[in-house]
Image 1 (cartoon, rainbow, N blue to C red):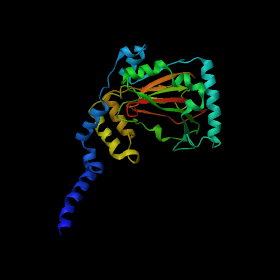
Image 2: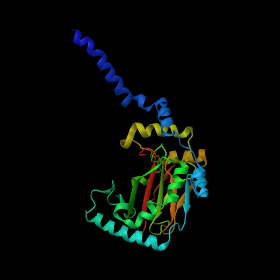
Image 3: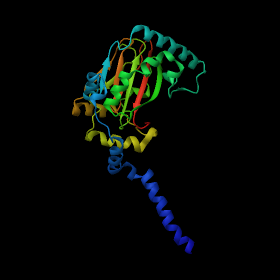
Image 4: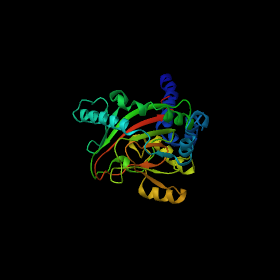
Amino acid sequence: MLGAVSSVPTRTRKAAKKLVREGPLKESRVVHRVQHARAYRGVKVRPELTQRPDLLEELDREGIAIVPDYMPADQIAAMLAGADEAIEKAKGGELADRTFTIQPDIVFRIGHVDELVPATLPFFEDPTISSVMEAYLSPRVVSFRRELENRFGLSKMAQADLFHFDNWRPICKAFLYLVDVGEDNAPFRFLRRSHKDGPWRTRYAIEFDAGGTSGRYGHFFPQEIRTLQEQQGWEEVVCTGKAGTLILADFRGLHRGTPLKSGRRVLLNNTFDLMNA
């Protein structure tokens, strides 16, 4: 009898922990505010940390900055040649340990491509890009994903073609186009100024954590995007550009891909955040 009585508090504690971990409390605004304060500790714009205040200012104001001809043609050609070799190896199954996709008939990515293709190092180790990210977020920011993305499936819609944000926590990416990307080559699209915090975001941020990858995970229905664009005045930018175009973007902002109509899209992706610092 004494054993049964003493086990009640233990069961209660376990139930309480499960409620916090899995139940409504996980989705509460109070919990989110605490998480938000932790995630943004020390995050602020520091113009003194970069020699490109123009890129920093544009990234901060618009959520995106586009630089045509960021790298010379000979460097881009060397990167693409190395990328094509890696792509062929991935297709042949030689890079299974670093190739990943959820839609293998549309797109795949190769991780740690800086180690696989040394010609890409001038991009991944670029001090200007790193300094802009440090100045924008924090000196603690780290480059934690270095990938090659190959999109090839024609007239097929990928999951990433729905408007979404990658995280409500600070996260940015640098893209470098290795081929010309026109309207038909699945250009990246971004809603300018959608990276800023505001009352509209809280609901979606809570859902992002509560539902995880099996939930909405930052994705939006078309009618939600229409309403938000009308309310917030966001403008969509279509990121077309020649090979060598650099795109810096805050991936808290709403963005999407587009179905590939012709050719292919090959790019390098350098992702920065504080969660992996």
